[in-house]
Figure (cartoon, rainbow over the protein chains, first blue to last red):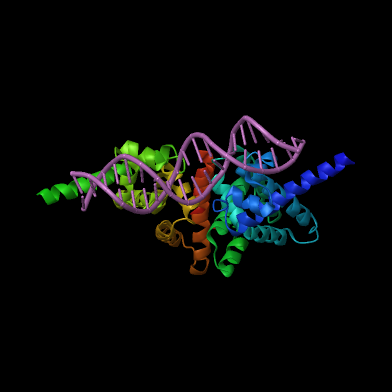
Length: 178
Length: 178
DNA sequence: ACCTGAACACCGTTCAAGT
DNA sequence: ACCTGAACACCGTTCAAGT
């Protein structure tokens, strides 16, 4: 029982740190958020964070994993929707955490763990596109090229913030027959 | 004469700092290169750099401008080549300074001057693509979408380092009729 | 096991003072 | 005009010491 209490506390505190960091990273930015600021918000001292997380980048990875499992669940719930609709939903969700996406790309070179996470994520999104493009009859020998173009373009959309109509036009061009 | 000497010295010293920083940014990376390291390489003290450049980001902008004017000249020399060939040449050149490209994207949010430079650069590259796509008969109403897809995909190629054949395939898909 | 106070090494940048 | 020595504020991270 005492043991359970401890585990409970541990997970809770960890979650509080993750939540505080997530909010700050999204609103203020990763670089602009110091560890001590996160600590204040999570009501601990800066070095306590290092008890739960190896460093700032690993904290980011934890946030991303939480984000991902949450969204993966929501995604599964939409089995009735068209694949293309689900795809646009994914893009919209990514848009919402745009700042995290930029940070991931910016920090790839500093953190092997982050790089690994990023690769796993890319594999997932590419698999999604492959399904979609198969449905509209893209041939196997054109498939990989089309998948890469689609993924890169989504990344560009997230990075550059285009006006909504142009964004929509580009999205549908990506999943149309060339 | 004394005056000319001074101007000469000034430009030379400035150029030495730019050259040292360029090399270090490309080989070690922007974040990994401290101002004092640049100073050592350029044979000045760190704060002397601040006499010539407002800050580290402005130094980066100076490097980029030097890079751009140099390449713009080389580009002009190739008027005999096919547009598509020149396009691939541009991509190859960008590949060579890949690390600077990543740094520009990573630091957009910190430096308005860098952001302005980046926008000018994008406008140039988009104009290039527009010419190319016009030649292969892309219609006006599809033009902007196609241009954006092409530019974003190039950015993705630079960021992700694909195997050469896949890179080539993607490049030609971009300038082919959809 | 969990948390802290205090310190470390390092960073980009500033500024008064020199020539 | 040009350059420097010395300092500033701040950062992520570490570690010995406490409970």
